[in-house]
Image (cartoon, rainbow, N blue to C red):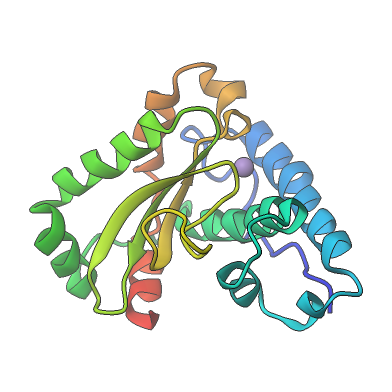
Length: 201
Ligand code: MN3
């Protein structure tokens, strides 16, 4: 079974003015579609074809660059589109709020920690909020299309919120102002979905 580009779930222009329509269109229909096609080509005819993307990433041979880059790109962008939404986003509450406050003190301290991880990632990569098996949470950052599911990468645990800080994610609108893009991201975070992922982890 080949992997399919997941539905975006909202229009390209739905996140304006925080994330512009042209960036969303290119990011989804070119970049994410490209990772999806390249992943399918990389695993065709191999045993990986019958595994879930999570299983592939957890047991990844990190020297397999085609699967590392494109499997990561396929998974990361799916999680990113789910991390943001134009409406019905809810607010941080419940057990996730408790876990974040236990680790970082306040929501604002958590946002600063996550934003710093995104801002200080040199070159291309991602910032993540992950949940460990004991329910505790962690912020970390990974390079390129790596992610915390991969062996020995990032903070471990399962990512439940992700922010793409590759230039292709913001450069058309924000140019070199990555910090402004990171600030805008918090306006569209889908807390309902992050909480759902936390509860299911
Ligand atoms: Mn991207």
